[in-house]
Image (cartoon, rainbow over all chains, first blue to last red; front, top):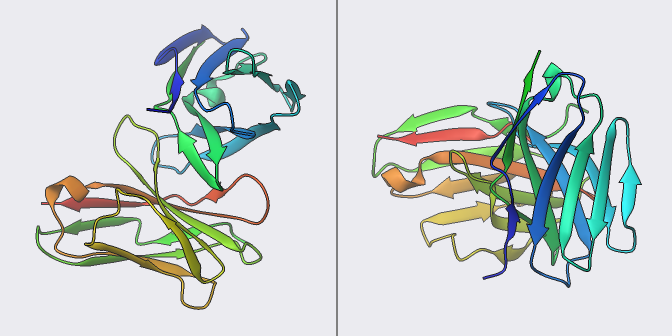
Length: 110
Length: 111
């Protein structure tokens, strides 16, 4: 079935390094994608979004890249900090609802 | 505005009991969503409202589940005759145009 998934369940990085979290989606008709960060005991927190008419969008320390040809989405976090430790989800918007993947846990070591 | 508010934060109930959760969305948001999340998984869509109209329900939402948004503001999610498999985090989110904003969820434990 169609789904949004992630390639790596856990990513460990050293503080100050850049992090890249990847996501694959299967519905080529999806036109809106969102990255969320979820800390333990909290709801998902919006990080950045991108529409399908773009291939790159930048925020503060974060960049989302969208490759529609291979249906791939990535989140790049520059100069990763301990506070970035969390589970990251990509979500695909279909008919006004979000379809989430299973998430990638980002662990940041000093 | 304090964001999306969900109550209670935690609920422990005995199997077979009914439970009701409340969600207060961001005031100007016309869309309200309910999701369920189990440990290690991403949130799963349950249902959503645009104003007071319930526009879509997931097949995950059995007939024991009912959601309402009577005046297009707050919403309630009721689970009747709870089962152990209903144990999960129930998340509410609201939006106006773009990315939904999530609340902190209600964690349900059915014993």
